[in-house]
Amino acid sequence: MSPLVEVKNLRKYFSVIRGFWQRGKEYVKAVEDVSFSIRQGETVGLVGESGCGKTTIGRTILRLIAPTAGEVFFKKRSLFALEDEELRKTRKMMGVVFQDPYTSLNPRMNIQSIVGEPLRTHSNLKGLELQERVIGLLGQVGLKEDALYRYPHEFSGGQRQRIGIARALAMDPEFIVLDEPTSALDVSVQAQVLNLIIELQKKLNLTYLFISHDLIVVNYIADRIMVMYLGRIVETGPANTIFNHPLHPYAKALISAVPIPDVHQQRKEILLQGNVPSPINVPSGCSFHTRCPEMKNEICKREVPPLKKIDEEHYVACHLV
Amino acid sequence: MLEVKELETHFFVYEGIVKTLNKIDLTIYKEETLGIVGETGCGKSVTALSILRLIPSPGKIVGGKILFEGQDLLKKEKEKMRKIRGNKISMIFQNPTSSLNPVFTVGDQLTAVIRNHQKVSKEEARKRAIEMFKQVGLPDPRRTLQKYPHELSGGMQQRVMIAAALSCEPSLLIADEPTTALDVTIQAQILNLMEGLKEKLKTSILLITHNLGIVAKICDRVAIMYAGEFVEEAPIEEIFGNPKHPYSKGLLESIPKVTQKGKLETIGGTVCDLLDPPSGCRFHARCPSSMEICQKERPGQTKIGKNHFVFCHLYNS
Image 1 (tube, chains in turn orange, brown):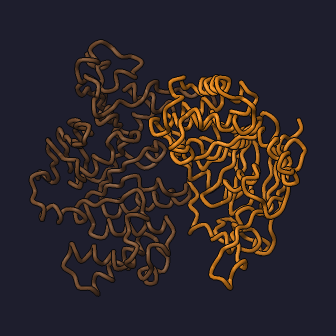
Image 2 (cartoon, chains in turn green, orange; image 1 turned 90 degrees about the vertical axis):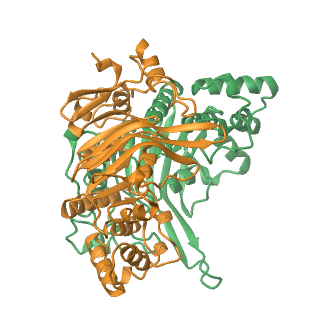
Image 3 (cartoon, one colour; image 1 turned 90 degrees about the horizontal axis):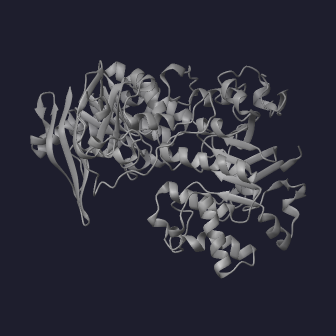
């Protein structure tokens, strides 16, 4: 199948302002030379620790923030080359659900205006027609009609996330970026939202980029997983392979550190020393070499390892593999 | 070592009385790690704060006993309570960034804790602080002592908090979601550190968390809480292998499994309003195997096995 979304050599640097004279001299390298593609109907999980660039990738793909370099193709069209009008048309096909259902809904708007806002922007629906469509959307995410004139504060976290999903579905998108959609929720509510997300994917043939730091959730929902460290993808492959037999030393440590909710399946954890280095001063060569428990060669300090093909769809960026 | 009996904590708010803790019983033994698990708002943190008598207004402990080393903490005078906090029972909070004072160096804060509880000279306290920093694995303790909280990462801040909490060698450490704000690799470091120090200092730990993975990893026993009441108490092998209470079962089934990818089981309905809790068992409205008696009577404790107790009418025969 042809890829729906294709990302090529994407870079995003944020300049750090430290006084007038130092302006533009230092950069946070949030995303560094990232390439991947997502096929139609697939769920790709993006995992990594805080500050590794997960959210930045999600937002750059949607062109919510401009990239420093690289390209993103959506349905074979370069997203960054589009003019305003064309961009608006393309954006209709993409949706986004944000992490925090408490801050991503405007407290002064009622549910009808929140869910209806994309419809008012992109379509000609008005009045009753618009309302009917909003009711339909709310029904899809398991909310009732009486929610229309209520405000976000009247809903629980799980319900708010449903409202966020309804808003993302408003324009019948093909591709949705889910940025930590269940991190703010309790496990029993998380289960409801995950079920909803999977159900909608089957029904509407959606393609997901699922960003999360919770590896258990990603392993559950994703077909493929990409592991990020300091702005780079260090390993990518089918969810089962990554979760059970990771090859990159960082992926190994990350996955071994996940506490598994079962006494009989405890794994031996690999403890990493120290903290993630600052993304302003990324270590030379392989950015993981400062903490890598397996590092042997000098080459790790000098050269950035490329993503090497190990197996069908399984790629690892490590000199040792 | 610590025994909580029929503890009741209520919050007196404008809308009425929120019965956050409804006569709960809890026992912590020497040198064990007990986990309290439950969802947001079920009263986990209130339990911890009640033990230390740190319930903020408008909350109040209205009944019950907290026996610590044979004495009722609820009858202690304020001064004596202060001597127990930090000295015999200490606490680590969820968010290390907001529990450290930003305008003092971490060294100042740690020596203040030590000098508050033990009669030692400044020099002695400083030595102890350096020793504690070494124990919790902070690099270059002498220099770290002079740093301000914002100069340290989240994981390092939590290490400082642990150093402060353990500096007076308490017999009970209450950890309220100690790793929730941290990344998994840092979480693994901190949990490992807590386990190591527990063995070394022979401390008991009361660990409050919503993550059942952490419970499986480091706890000996676990108590599951729902809407201000304990519903089940068991050793961890029992809770994961043989959960009894319908809520415990639902909670365990709603976690995505590592090996299989079927549809997730969910618990129907939403958590009850603690302002107006349902009669009888507080879980009855959401319970798949609810019976008539559940609506009327609060279930008592039923013993299932060694150290395994459940509060449910289903097992009341």
